[in-house]
Structure formats: C-alpha cells, structure tokens
Amino acid sequence: MNSQSKKLRVIINCAIFAAITAIFAQIEIPLPVVPISGQTLAVGLTATILGSRQGAIAMVCYAALGAVGIPVFAGFKGGAQVLVGPTGGYIIGFVAAAFITGYILERTKFNLTMAMIANTAGMIVTLLFGMVQLKLVLDLGWGEALAIGVYPFIVVGLIKAFLASWIGITVRKRLVQASLIHPTRRSAA
Image (cartoon, rainbow, N blue to C red; front, side, top):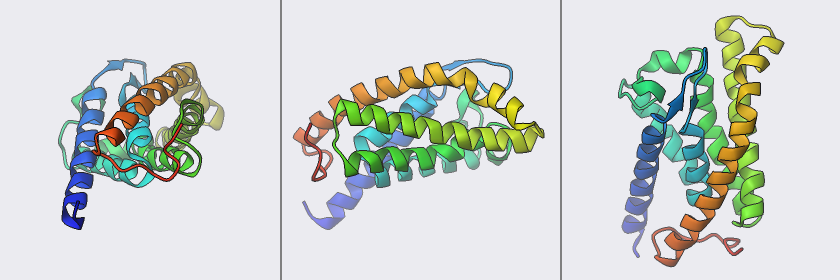
C-alpha cells in the first residue's frame, strides 16, 4: 500500500470513529448536571482499536465538529459554548484519554488485561478534565466537583472500560487480520 493510500485510510478511520462517538453520545441517562452518555465508551473503543495517535485525532475531529455547531455532543448539542460550559472538560479530556489509552496499549500489549488497565486510566483522565472544568465554570469546591462530576461515574465508567476493552480488542484483531489497520509491534495477545 502506498503512502497516499495509508494516509487516506488514517483519515477514513478517524472520521468513522468520530462519527461513532457522535452516535454513542446520543445514548444518555440524564443526571442533574452531567449526564451519563455513551461517549466515553466510544472513546475507549476508538483508542483500543486505533491506538494513541489516530485515537486522539479522531477525538479532535469529534470535538471540532461539535465546536463548529454540528449537534454531535450528548443530547444533540453543538457549539463552542458546550466546550466552555460545565461539561466541556469531559469532551476536551476525550483527546487526552484516547491518547493515553492507546499509548499504554502500544507500549505493552493489545490484550484484554492491558486494555482494561489502559481504559481505566483513560476514564480517570476524562473524569479529571471534566471535574476541573466543572469546578471552575460552576465555581464549586473540590468536594462538590468530585460529588457531581466524578463519583456518579466510577461504577458505570468501569463497566464501559471493560466493554471498550473486550469489544475493542476483538474488533482490532479482526481489522488487523483484514489489513484495515496496521498492527503495532506489540499487537499480539
């Protein structure tokens, strides 16, 4: 495959996973300030399947689509005001979470155990970004920010980390076999 074809494949993969994240964002359980949504599951899947660089690029694309007003965020919201609002830290955190999750997997192995560790680390990163912005925008104390922006999401976050790991590793293996993504030197289980 030539260089131009590889670049096109990267662009297509990133666009597909940005779209998957937009779709998963619409699966939501409303809570008073920050809803539980499928976005973080999509972030984990993206990073587990694509790795650090492409995973982060896909999340930048997702955030950029929403920032320009396309309603891709939870509850069919869009616009820069979402990114600077109370829940925007979570979306910004998706970029860092995808990179860190993929990076851990690239430096270790793409297997279920390492994927669970990596996705749990990604979940923590997302929650930290979200909590900090929630605190700043709503002028909360750290305890309140934890109570509203972190604690309600730990159990469901671990469940999503497991699902992202299990589904992500399975899909990644099949995509590597089909030569639709390139394996890293440590892709074997």
